[in-house]
Figure 1: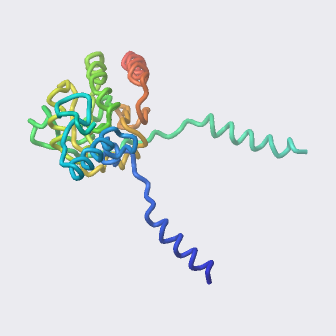
Figure 2: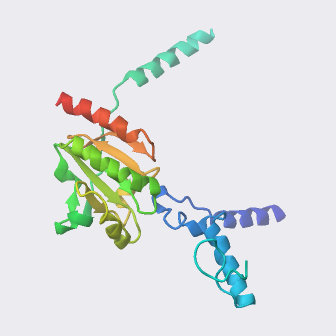
Figure 3: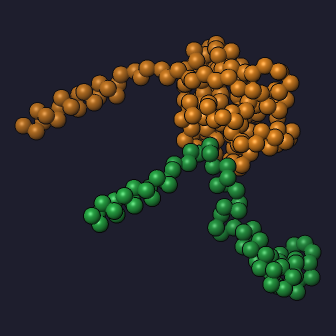
Length: 70
Length: 165
């Protein structure tokens, strides 16, 4: 019984697998989809500081901002 | 004894390798023009290029190597006036392509394959993909994915092919 249940669950999970064709990778090629992206890290960091202490900016070396939250 | 089995198989394999392969007809398409070519109101069909060499380029604005290839293709077109280059765009948003094409050479014919029918028909395996079609409407050769030397190789091939004519 357990074996059938495991098989059914596995079968259902595999339904989510899909092959993305090379010409359908527009969204995947977006820099925000890159887990190593500095952009993602910076956006999350800015969100954290803005909600916790209301400070905005100073997250990058280029551009404005007081730099107090760095 | 083993040789008695191996030799017939080897002969069949050698004959299959030596046999000329049947030409593959290029799947036809009917697509709307983009960029400067969009001044022509009608759609463009591959069949209207029968009797001419055609180079298809599948590209998108989100694909950096594709963007790198387009100016090289424009140079190729300048070198081979008899060659028709159709650059098929695969962006989801047509406007992105239209904006990008404002800074691109005007000697290529840009088409929009929004439904990806042509990409599906040619079973694209990488971006960009270059497909050379002969005047009889058959696929001569193809390059799936970016290769730095692809355009130079294509230039040499086209020079030889045009000389034959």
